[in-house]
Length: 71
Image 1 (cartoon, rainbow, N blue to C red):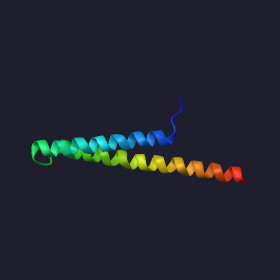
Image 2 (image 1 turned 180 degrees about the horizontal axis):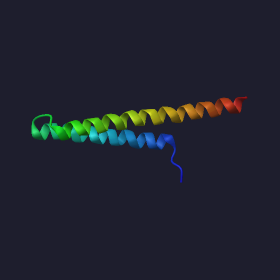
Image 3 (image 1 turned 135 degrees about the horizontal axis):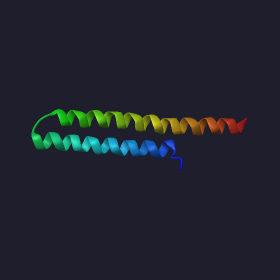
Image 4 (image 1 turned 135 degrees about the vertical axis):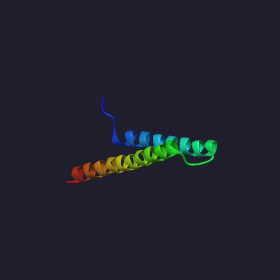
């Protein structure tokens, strides 16, 4: 079963938001930035970046398919 780039992108954005939430909670609970907080922020950054890239790729493919049909 194939997943669309849009669905994968949305899932990555959700994971990025979840990692961001956990990082904020970790900083709030421990009173400062620790190693685990930095790891969570790095994971969130990669996930959000990948999610945005996949969503833009989905719309790029849709736009290319639409142009191909118009020819």
